Image (cartoon, rainbow over all chains, first blue to last red; front, side, top):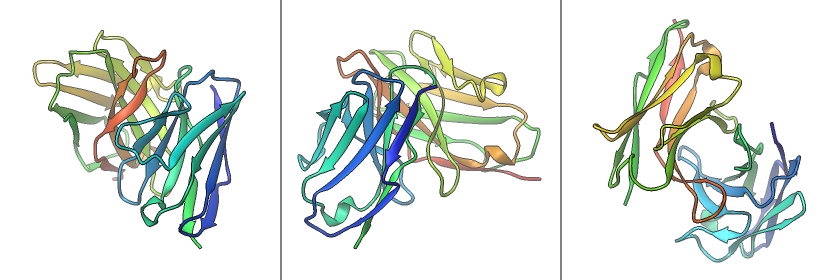
Length: 107
Length: 123
């Protein structure tokens, strides 16, 4: 199975900060990566698909990029509603797998 | 707007079979290039993919669950279901159903999710 290693597992940041979360895939997965946001007690919601495509309705402060087997989710200016847990997920091959998650907390 | 809603028992006894249903509204499970997937999440932990069925009838299961798992499509009721046999406490989790769509790429992504249903395995 493809292993996705997310880092950091948690971070503290302030409103307005630029935040980056990394997901490393082993082995490689082409561009087949999605990012999801999950708030407490809620289902995950899709932010980014195909490594860098923004899902409809998602604010433009969210962006995704890829470099080889490393994928990055960037929030350009953290807003109060962005405090949540973020997961990466690969769709390259079965079984589908998720990263361990990154919890973004208020500093 | 497509919506998904999970339903099923909140409590299941060890060794029994867990059956969950996901009802799709605002769209058809049998139209378009979609697949329908199940994911679970133990309390305070990460997400685990369980398996999926496409509207072609093709299924794919997580190898860790494959021997106990069946996912089926009920087009007449616009639903899909999960059946997990011989459950143990390790199967206690919130279970989500989701739609997978290809966004005109080579891959499928989970673009619509149900709210989730919590299942506890206990005697």
